[in-house]
Length: 175
Image 1 (tube, rainbow, N blue to C red):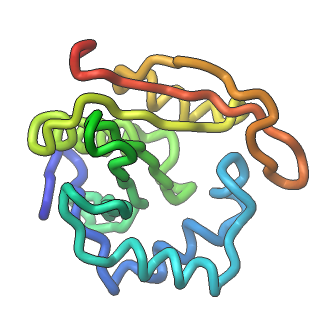
Image 2 (tube, rainbow, N blue to C red; image 1 turned 180 degrees about the vertical axis):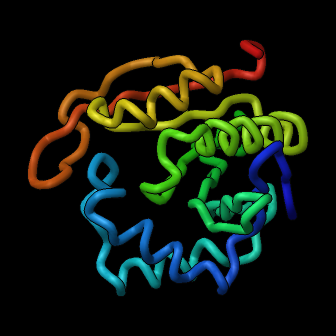
């Protein structure tokens, strides 16, 4: 599976993406507003899970690498997990290397996976959770048409501190 945009392409995560995945999931700077950075052992387990075959009946994440088309540079990853098959709802998440931040790559990737989720997979709703401190992430969600549906107070612990999380949603009928 490949999904191409103007500047990036999304493709299934594969074994060649281990170094990228390890960097994204263990970097304190990238994980600053997401989770505590994962250990190498946890990261290996997550990588193995995310490189398993996927279909629209799966209960696991569909994980896609984000590559810049012109340079071939690996920028990050984006994925979705169908959390309610009957109601056709999926959670979306993304991580980008710091040198790819602020350049519109996350927004383009989110728009591509949104279109795939709603047109090809025929999902009804996409949801995302992000720390209220992660301004860049929630601005990406808002640019892609997601609406803030709520705030969960002290919902996460990041860097040994409680963090509020914003919940975002995008419904098919809202497009």
